[in-house]
Length: 64
Image (tube, rainbow, N blue to C red):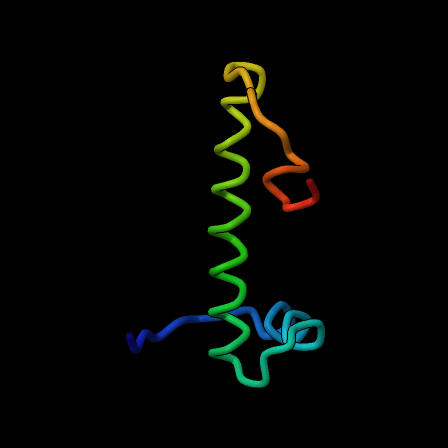
């Protein structure tokens, strides 16, 4: 989707310097995906201590 944005040039430059993306579009898409991933993880914390785990992590990871 094509969108016009007013971006902070300094922030975009800093993001581009640490990103694997080669274009502004690549960097912005990477940042959006990372934002969504972090938000989902943060939202999962509301369940911390409220769900009982019954399983074997080693088995799930194929170590057994």
